[in-house]
Length: 214
Ligand code: MG
Image (cartoon, rainbow, N blue to C red; front, top):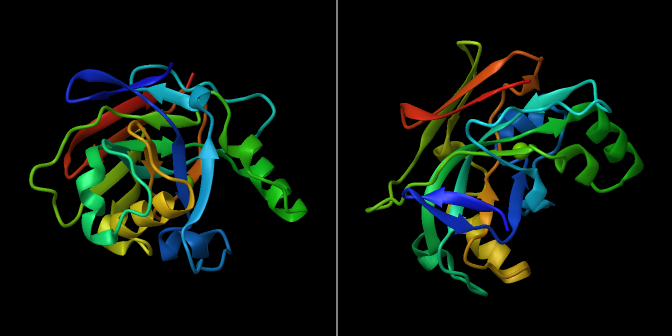
């Protein structure tokens, strides 16, 4: 069983959903079209990496990229959740990294294959603790600095598919369960990691989480 921390207590994780290409400027930087519906992929639970554990770069990729993302934890599952009720299904909000073997992903995309190898390695789902939000804010801002240098800044108002749409969509197609974790997409500025890097994430201007690359 894999767990994340919500308001200081451990919560078992069910499924890790990720949304791709959810910010126009990031889709553009990788030469991708904007999607007509949320682009969904999954990560295995073994990819989860809590704060404080080192990121170990796999030796079969030469280009592991950081993707800083707002991450939400589902508290109450459901099918066919209407957008108007979607935010009520969120138990907590955190910050994380959808680590991506970009060289592998490029090969997979060319072949039309699933992205699992590029997105699912151990540690590819770095995640902070989660905190509940009462009331739920209209927007979140977040950032990633690498070795003290700002690399990515995100504002959820720039999402192509906002949280309500993502939750309604996932609940309709797959069903959502308590303990599901959703990575909501990365803004522009993705780039490679090197051994020794320190990654510092903020959420709404507050310290969010930190990881070091082994
Ligand atoms: Mg991503």
